[in-house]
Amino acid sequence: MTAHMQDRPATARPGTPDRHRTPPEIPCPPRRRQGPSPARGVLIRPLTRRQVDDRMGELGELYAHTSSSEPGIPDPSDRAGSAAFRRRLAGHMRWPGFELLVAEAFRPSGASALTACAYSFPVRGTGPWWQGLDGYLPENLFRAAASGKLFAVADVVVERRVRTQDPTREWNLARRLQKRLLVDHTGALGVTLVDRRDVDTYRALLAWGWRCLPDEGRRASRFAPRRLLVLR
Image 1 (cartoon, rainbow, N blue to C red):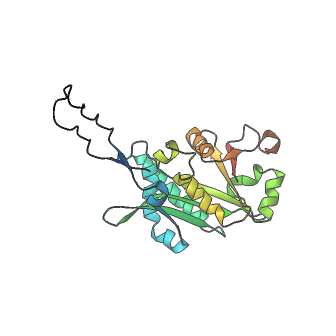
Image 2: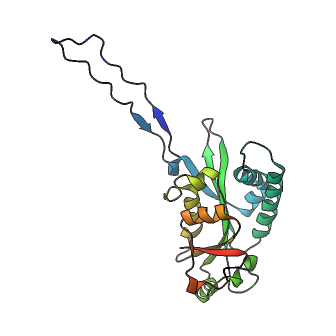
Image 3: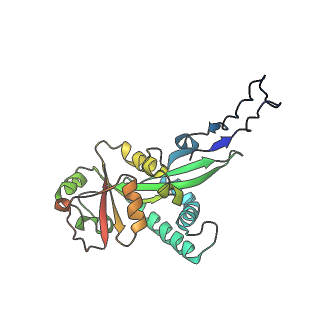
């Protein structure tokens, strides 16, 4: 995010104005210095499967921290959610083409800290389908899967402020992660499934550029437990 630092306020010249002297200047509003851009303030890089294994505990803590309703306050549900995330991630790591990106912010001391992560893998036209995705795909997305152009974006783990502050800006961290996952695959499409009860995530994804398919492109009924979203 952009930081602003305020200078010391300007001071009017001393003295009392009279009819023979010009009045003192009116102090100008304090100037603001522009801090580092959000894009430069955070480094995004991939982790190998080995590195993901080595940092699994750290990734689980990141998930618990970002999903907590009260950041900084321990909650048993945070630990349960963290454990479920680690199990899910460990299973998804086995998919061919799996890629995980992390975002790291650097402290004044020079140490880095994980602030976000996201991962994806290609969905093939044959073999097992991710979370029953085949029950949601229209015919044209089946063709994209068969050609290796369809990628499931399984998790985008970011702090709550990334969901609510400037979600439509290109430098938004979630948007940067999503873009990096697909940028190396020409013509690739991202797909994800969202629980219909998870309204917060659904709205955040829409703000980050994901779209629902038009009615004629939908395969699952509106009573299905999940929604299919597409990112181009």
